[in-house]
Image (cartoon, rainbow over all chains, first blue to last red; front, side, top):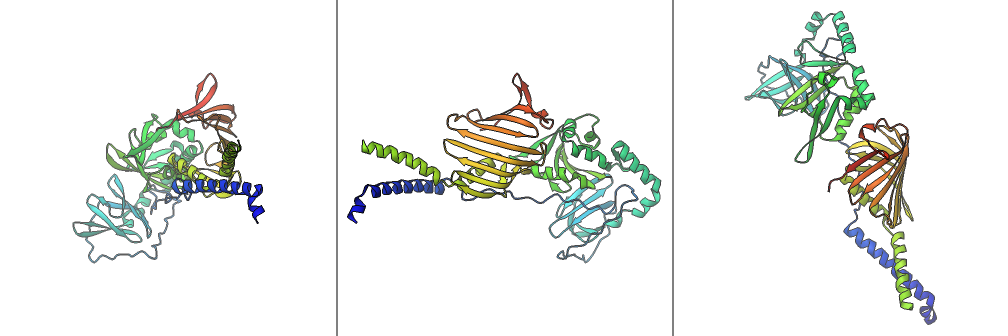
Length: 286
Length: 168
């Protein structure tokens, strides 16, 4: 035993082990002090949801209204007393799930996308059912139905040939405005030409980040080529794009998600800030 | 003399052991943390620990929250004096649709630079991150299909290049 402990081999082995332990200890201290214990994983935010519109804003024959099924867990509040009102208002769109309630309301040519709790001319969006939305104002409740849009009347005044003519015109011109001027109809082909060739986008429009206190709150239009499609869409230099179809543009991913899904979108609401005023631009994709 | 031998021997042994027992995965996490500062996230990857480094498979690469690419293989070789990251078979969501390889090398002989070389359907680019100048400079060595990048490139007597300075 004495021979072994005194041998050169044992001494060398002990030396190696000591150095190994020192190396391990150095890394242990560095790991505890400076190295992270876990990696960084990407967590995806909610994807862009297509907005629900009960009718096409233009008079198209092909359109068949979709049916919204109220979520099972959603409590539909039956108001005790409904006061007739909001006669000049139209409920254009309703998107209602257990997590999210977003509507588009129009008064004349002015439209606004509202989330639950938001105000429009003093009317506060309270809740919604299958085909209606409830608003509060001055302690009174107001019910706005989707059927307020006069579909039948529109059909009478817009015969088939008018719808066909509209469709032809959209295909030819790319973008046309509806009669009331509140909405623009954009051809799918025109959108596809931009999604297939990103260079075409940057030739016509320049967009940069818009940050408030270092936080991305939207994308600013830095320039728009004259007579370009983006100008026809109603965008102007200096506009800040804040949301698309109710989805806030607070990340590049939100903007990119929209770009990727643009081909499948049928209706589009662009929320913008122009001269510090919030506005909504409505488009129908045909 | 015996003592001097022991000290030098011990020092070199310590370097070798430090390399062998390095917590490569944690060092990779540190790299991820640094990349996060530039809004780059490598996600959903699988690791294989090797004695000289780390191999990572099927990594999704996000830049500013956008999934830009999926890399089938990332090889991180840590030799302290010479460190290398090789990314292979990258499929991207935007042009160019495929990148064959990207290699990044940090060599102690050139401590001022992280050398970058990449090849793919766009051609070949070479350059690096100049640490002191906080500059990324990439030069086009062989151009095949550069249309998607044209607007980002500048031109001088050596050809097309991309240059970007980073803030402190």
